[in-house]
Amino acid sequence: MALNTNFNTHASIIDGKLEVEGTTVPVDDAHTLLSRNFIVHQATACAQRAATKDDDWKASRPIAKGKFTTGPALAVGTETYYVKGLTAGSGAFVTITWSQTITIT
Image (cartoon, rainbow, N blue to C red):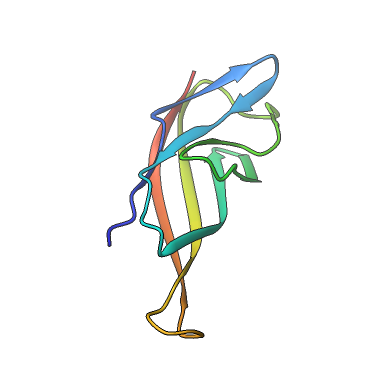
């Protein structure tokens, strides 16, 4: 089972807030998403947020613009899943991480 998650290639500064979004390809019923988090880093600016659990996800609360400016930034994400086992009590936890360059506009 492949897990596939990506940030949208562009994040936007809207009304003084950094809007970060992404997409996760839905997984089978054996996988239950427990958490999704991300970090965005650009020069001296850095912010961490939890993200919604939707397939088309976004930050769970606004990120203040702070020192973020237009241009490239590094985004790193994590997702943790509970995977049902074949027998009761035989499940496991799986955490994936990914990183990608995004552009803040």
